[in-house]
Each structure stands twice: as C-alpha cells, then as structure tokens.
Length: 200
Image (spheres, rainbow, N blue to C red):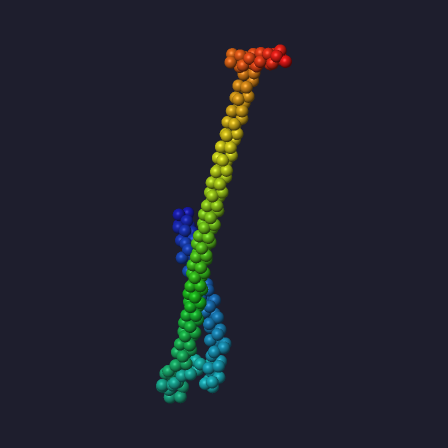
C-alpha cells in the first residue's frame, strides 16, 4: 500500500501532470467565459435580428403527424450556434497562442539583448583592466629605473667617501711616520735657513 501511494505521489509530482492540471482548470474557467459571451452577448443580438426567441428555435419542419405536430425537423439553429461557439473558442485560442508566441519572441529578444550587453560590458571591463595593467607596468618600470639610478648614486657616493677616507688615513699616516727623503728635505731646509741667518 505504501508503495502504491509513493508511486502515486511521484506521478502527481511530475511537471507535465501539474501543467496538465493547471491547463484543465484554466480551460474550464475559459469555457465558462466563452459560454457567457455566446449566450449572453452574441446570441441575443442574433435572435433579435432573426425575430426568434433563440437561435436554437431556427428549424425547418420536414414531417408532421395527422394533428399537425412536427415529427421531423431540421434544426439548423443548433448547428449555427455550435459553429459560432467553435469559431469564438478557436479565435480566442488563436489570439492567446499569438500573444504567448509574441511574448516569447520579445522575451527571447530581450534575453539576447541582455546577453549582448553583458558581453559588451565584459569586453569593456577587460579593456579597462588591460589599460590599467599596462599603465601600472609602465609606472613600475619607471620606478624601477629610478630605484636603480638611486642605488647607483648611493654606490658612487659610498665609493667616493671610501676614497676620501683612504686618502685622509694615508695623509695622517704620512704625518705620523714621515719618510727618509722627507726628513732629509726638512733638515736641508732648516740648514739653509740657519746659514742664511749667519751670513746676515
């Protein structure tokens, strides 16, 4: 029993069954609308123009009995009413299908337009991102060149300072420990100075 209810639940849960039920409910309501349209609006005008009480009263008597009562009639009024019902229903269904198809076409066009706009926006975003990346790359190259130039300047400054420090140390070393040649030159200068004083 549980299996039966489970299969029934699966059956009624299918999309096509639900769609069929919805279509049946709408068709029933639509049938009432069409019947009211025919019986309450169109038929009174037709019967008024024909002078009969109703369209179904239109008939031709083919045979009568001895008392004159009709025994065989050709009731073409019912046929006309049925044809009118059919034409109204067919026209209504045609218009409904036409509206639905037009709506689908517009919706399809709208989806295609939105998809194209989305692709266009994506292309524009890609272009912007590429331009930004190119600008950032160019800026990075400039900054890197400036960094290398600054490093080279600092290196040269350090080399200059190192050379100046080396020369200063050498000069101090020379002052502390003069060479023999410098001592002889200094003694000679002193002797010359003394001799010049004596000669005076």
